[in-house]
Length: 414
Image (cartoon, rainbow, N blue to C red; front, side, top):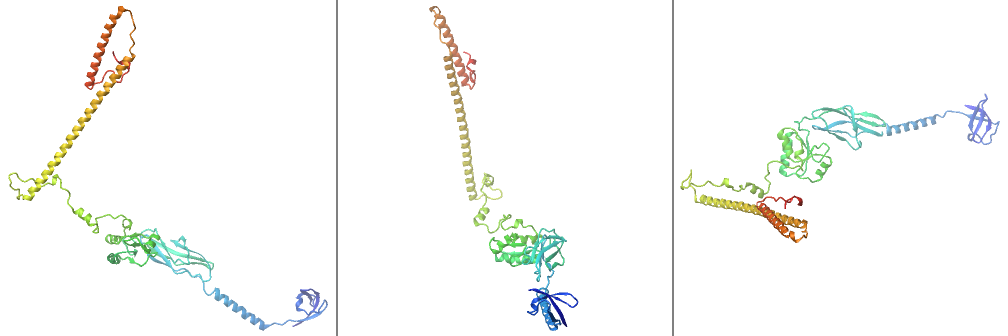
């Protein structure tokens, strides 16, 4: 198709072309001949390039196939959930590695009985989880919900029922350091109760049985808070026909019960020794007439009886001497107390006499006519004072109390 166009305005980038019906067309100046100017007429041929169209179509389809192969061949898959183990109060769930394809992970959540129980940490690395604190003999339903940038996917519901107390099939035991004989007995007991014995500490391990608290497996069991018990716990569960608490069977728990055969020989010998012989355990006294009561007394028994009687008499003498010494000590103490009381009373009397003499008024000098009367008064005073002291000494000797004891000076009668 040939089209004739008139050049209008020429610019460095765009040239305006005029059609015969007076329409304006902007055309790139670089595609026009270099010597054109305003008013020039140019012929433009327009034709369809089919070969180019086919090549472009083929390139476009190849690109679409490449994009689909890279991003659309695989798509995220729904998680596959299953129950690994169940006990009386816990359930261990596991699932296949999640398939994200080219999508990005947003979250992986666990639902219990239709309600969200929580998100799974590190869902691309963790493929199992343990739910504890469940009720005994109760049914639960679990499912996973996977959220990605390509959409949300849900797993199938898994229904699990916890075990009864008499169902021991959920017990999973990992053993530590055990003697060979104890390990063999434990293996047979585990088989009889229907439990499982696994190698290594795993997420579904319910109990760690050992006799020594050491080793890598023991350390891992402590890190995972797995009960570490003695082999007697399995025997007790088998004997009672039900699962028992582990408090009394912890490895570091204090053992109670009859003494074991592994006790030291000295302790055993001390326990087997007879108690010391007392007066009640002495052999009966032989008849005085030398006869027998049911059987004759041998010379050895007679000698033993004499020795026992001698020891008894020595003990009686020692007790009597102790009693006599106690009585003499008591008498000495009483005598000392009595003498001390007498000394104290004498000191009080002397102090009182000194106070009386100090407070007594001095005689006043009078005429010679009154000397005879004064001498008579002095004789009477000394006589009364001598009688008072004699009576007080008699009272003190009898253990009594003098009138002046504990009283003031004014209360003493002179």
